[in-house]
Length: 224
Image 1 (cartoon, helix red, strand yellow):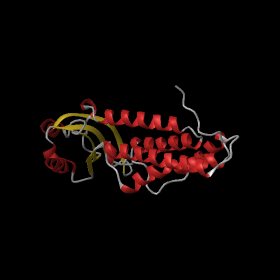
Image 2 (cartoon, helix red, strand yellow):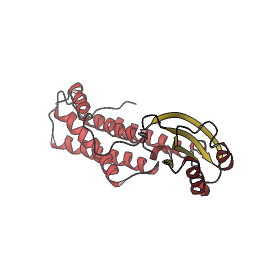
Image 3 (cartoon, helix red, strand yellow):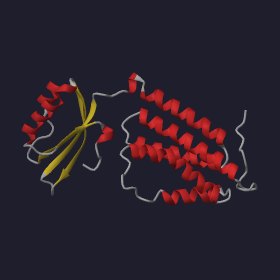
Image 4 (tube, one colour):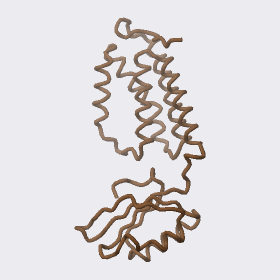
């Protein structure tokens, strides 16, 4: 079994029929990518629409450069230098964007069969992976705490962690405010998610009511 191109852009003329077939395939497969993104975590309407139409945009670029795949990929790379108003928040966002671009390159070069195959295959893998119990981390969160420099971060929160957490791990320590404060980054797992507010209130009393951030890894901005 082989995946054959419906046309060869280096020798065939760009026809209305080919353009319609490729664009329709791009939109359909882009919608499949957007649906997979929607089912595997948080999403928003604008990003889902972007994932749907992006393959058609990339496919148009590929087709307009008359089959020179190297040139088309270079052009797409140039577009990647443009900074979006909303920066991707996680690796899931970045991989979904790249997935959409792969679909566009495949359909733009006429490999619609392979584009459909890889879309279905990868969507199935992602949906299965995100629903495996072993990969679910509903109670695992990121905790970021700011403390004054005169506090010993090695032991100051030990009793609170023992009371509220199943486990915790200090990932890194960062100085801030001209070295007068520390920012602590933990990976934690709560014993009871309903006690999250109580836990944060206890931390606030301990760190002098300075900044505390607690949430899932994909929802916390890395620039803390």
